[in-house]
Length: 195
Ligand code: SAM
Image (cartoon, rainbow, N blue to C red; front, top):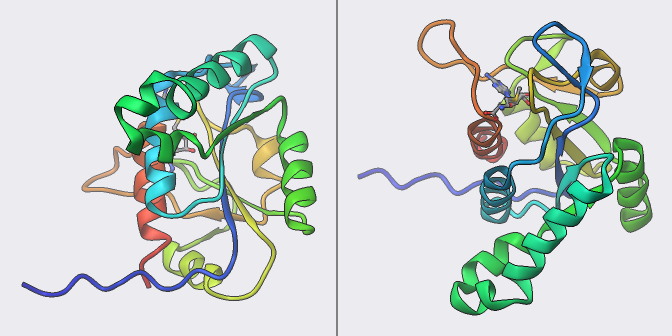
């Protein structure tokens, strides 16, 4: 059995965020989506596996952010974490922010450098880079990277246009490739750690 290549050592800090506003709806209008707790759990476990610094749920409604923080508290400080300590490791990465701009400012304050935005989508909305190029960039010195995923029907142009890079759409067998955000996050993180 061939040894699995060990992932290259990443030099740059990697952050991850799920955007819930602004988000496109089926008609291409802007909406706000609801945070789903399975997204919080799944993306934080993928993030922990690939040593992502933080997983941010971006949502303008305080009640939605409070819900995430309540779930986080249960697994990090409460009975959930005592029962399943490995969940603490993952959920401790979760944070919330009212907007992308606020989260970028938070990262800049924490890292003393503004993050580079990398976006993902099932369609190529702007020139894309391959995951291999992305993995290569992460092994070289540079600012932190904030990897953005959408919800609903995807990230709108006003977010895509802020990005330094769009990672190439993940393509399987054939041309249907509308992955759940959880699946897209896991595949993206794995591919960004394979040279
Ligand atoms: N409610 C849906 C769910 O089940 O998660 C939300 C779908 S949301 C649009 C999926 C997000 O995952 C996209 O905004 C994008 O960030 C990412 N995504 C989905 N399919 C992808 C693909 N083929 N390649 C890259 N990213 C993809």
